[in-house]
Amino acid sequence: MTIENTSDQRIREILASQRDFFHTGATLPVKFRKEQLNKFYAAMEQYQSQLAEALWTDLHKSFQEAYLTEIGLVKGEIKEHLNHVKRWARRKRRCTPLTLFPSSSYIVSEPLGQTLIVSPWNYPVQLLLNPLVGAISAGCTAILKPSPYVPHVSMIIGDMIKETFPEHYVAVVQGDREVNQSLFACRFDMIFFTGSPALGRRVMAAAAEYLTPVVLELGGKSPCIIDDTANIKIAARRIAWGKSLNAGQTCIAPDYILIHEDVKEAFVREFAASIKELHGEDIKQSEYYVRMVNDKAFERVKSYLQDGDIVYGGRTDATERFIEPTLLDNVHPSSSVMTEEIFGPIFPMITIYKKDGAFKEQVATFVNEREKPLAFYWFGNERDAWDVIRRTSSGGGCINDTIMHIANGNLPFGGVGNSGMGHYHGKLSFDVFTHQRSIVKAPTWIDLPFRYMPYKFFSLIKRML
Image (cartoon, rainbow, N blue to C red; front, top):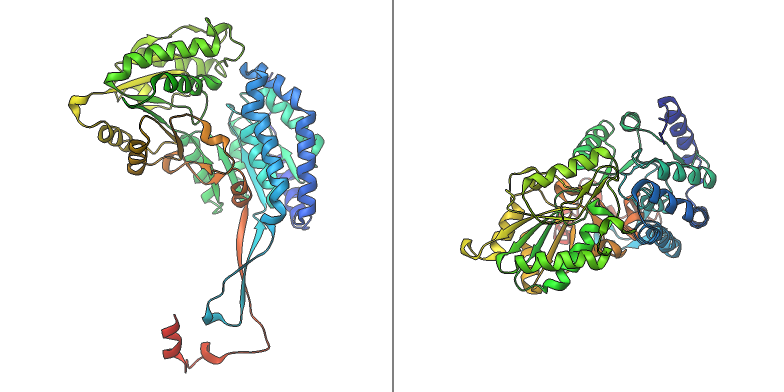
């Protein structure tokens, strides 16, 4: 299936219609927002089977994984906003200092306006529609741009949105990077982009033309640390799950391993056992194991196999875009597999030797010499984990687990530095599409003279400040 590009003229027509609609004020009432969220939820219910089928067609993603990592997360986010948007959107009173007496102070949450949401192909439902929940909840309009690399999913989402919302409120535009360039050349009130750091830089450069605020959910190389204090059996199982989920095509997938020399052999053995436990004797036959999204991705990820010694896995099949979860040993820190985001099931290991110094110090140094990652995973003693977390930086992470911090809607999700900027999920999804407007209300029944020239009460006011 080939996705047809939406023309530049059509994009500008949609943008103009959304601008006009937003300025009518129709999106401002909370009642309207809740009505749209309810429509959105009903559409997710109606299209659930079609979305799951499209995810299987494009990515070989099972219904269970499609629901748990995509459809269910969007439905849960909608319910969270339905339950709380009235409170979130309410005008909030704040304390007023004595110097402003007798005024009162407020924060008004107002929608940013016209928004653009651009998503990648790896979680094409969740990463496009979860931000949309926040845009609707905040009272914005939205243009959605799904990825052309998952054409069946993108077409189903286009059909669903068209049936659910008028295009002057929410619309989908389709196409390749030429369409992205057309979109980024337009003026929006906010751009929400999920993708690679390289593309994130282009988005930010384009947004600078209009000083458009951006949320960049990017990626990077998320380290997975295995200390000699780790429960190796549990660590191997949770790491094998996190790396094989979506075949490693997850922005917060553990990217590389820093492992204590004393537990490396045991980890390799338990990792192999865990893959078989999760996917059966032959993972290629597993209905729960995803394929590379396209031939280009397959060839890129496969090329990393030459950057080290294969100690587990290594099988590939170009006809199915299948790459087996693979552990690589004896990799050089400057090799491609250690300098590029893998976005696949290849797992390089760097051994930390006791003779080179304390484990924690080596780990912190190695991580800090590189760009700040989107996630950080530690397996071992909790006290040591907090110590290393204090010395390093990442968007988020887990102690003795992988991936699961994204499942808690009460936690902010986002990157730092090269891995992104801005956070969302739960109330933060509302906040990120909202401007917090400061208002001071001054009465007219009294007009205190202290602020007026020639500042007769300056010495008194100076002591109050």
